[in-house]
Length: 519
Image 1 (spheres, rainbow, N blue to C red):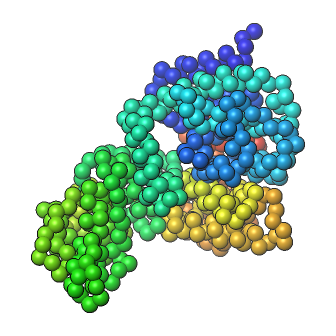
Image 2 (image 1 turned 45 degrees about the horizontal axis):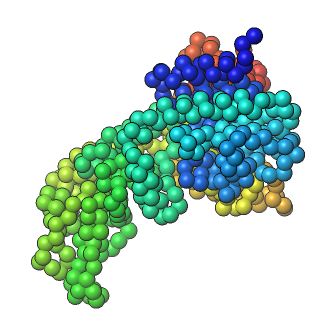
Image 3 (image 1 turned 30 degrees about the vertical axis):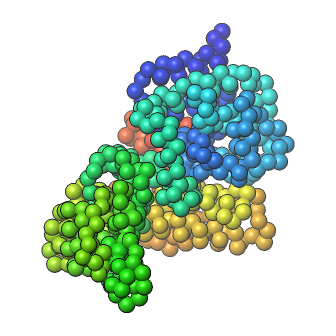
């Protein structure tokens, strides 16, 4: 009889020579691990400084992929990374579990369960961890942890294959310096991420990488709240200027009289209150990049001076005849239609063409599909830590509501909505629960009309599902039924393909389909 470890390792060895997308490579890795050690949930997490970032999960809520687990706040994960060997926690371990409330099909606490974790080392450097959870408290009792360690060694080779190109592109020293730049850009909070896995989000990241390595001026457009500043930071960090400063200025936040001084600086006595000279944003950004947010708000006189800097790299401080030369890459952003502003005479045509050498459109949240759940997970974990909660999750009904909403305020609206929902859910309890669950009513979206809730691609289909007089549960069930049936049609009834598209564990999809009466 073939040893189970060999059965699990053979597909991974074969995959090492294949050109696979990262997500598919990681999915195959976890599938092989579950073949070796059957369990209810498994996750692959990468270590970034002191934060574990989920790259792929099975058997866990989809919002888990958007969460960021800081080691100091999650003692089980901290213990796993500190041990070179695999760690199995006793079933009566009272340490909080990072996946409390996140295992699919579990509506209560993970009080008695089996939990395993194993660190992954790439070239003798800690890269991340693999975690396994089983609702059966005796699941891993007979497991040979040497098998898990052998698997982890090949898993490390798998992740190294995925990251080989990026490791070749940047030296270890470059990576360290970039991490420092990221930290400064985020005000010391650690890297601010562009979170998402949707096709439109991946295309945006590809464009960022493409234009980041170029010297081109970039004009970022998109609706309010989509994250244009984060895109600007990502472009700067992809550029050869990454080790130099990125200086930001919100052009709409300053009075007209101060905008020119902020951009170009001033000399002592240049205007009332100028008691000393100062450098402007362009001089501070010399050698690096400057991000001009809401550039469409600049007054016309300032636009002409900005155009001069773009054309010649020369500027004059307010009140001075002396010219200063600067080497600055401009990244601008606006939620206005600048072409229309040009036609209306409110924006200079020559400046518009200079700024929009490479136009980059950031997609609205309503076009990003299930990215909303990843982002919700990110904000849930932030609120969990901020509120001192042991575990914070969102009910399946609440997730369905988030997927159906149109998000006119985009990611910023989602961030604020999650914060309000946590407070509402917390106020309903006299004592803090072990697991705080955000139910759909706490989101405050239940009064939205069905038409307003639908995304453009799903609008025509969602409207017939939500019938007058139905409750929220019936409406969500109808929406889920529609999604599953459509996916079945696209994949010719292949349930494995449907589970992959919907980012669900196959067993959990089968249970859901059975409950919904889908055959």
